[in-house]
Length: 117
Image (tube, rainbow, N blue to C red; front, side, top):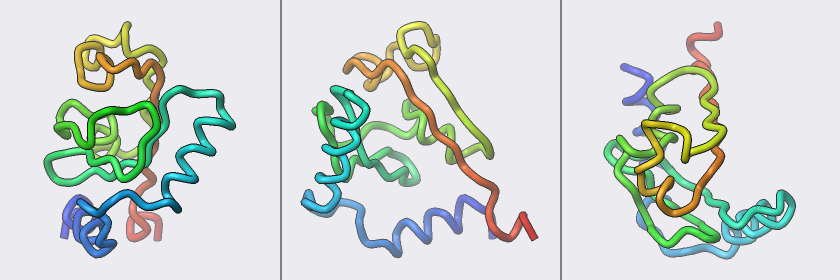
């Protein structure tokens, strides 16, 4: 079974996709925005074809297409992705996130536990 199939099965098993807002997630998102002094913070889940936002501060949309989401790129790779400035990045400057004011992104996917053994 491929890593992506395992990842999507685990995501579906969480039963979080398409659920209503939850104060426990919103508290974490607000705290992250406050601690880092950011106007935008989110908790998102990368599904097969979209990035869905479970909790968000300063983000109007509830989901974006996966192919336009840096989280989708992270899920497809193994290692870090840092976008220092969305406005200077040809791939993401015109994306939904880039147009909504996101400027910086950092994400990382570790290799699956089975690959570490």
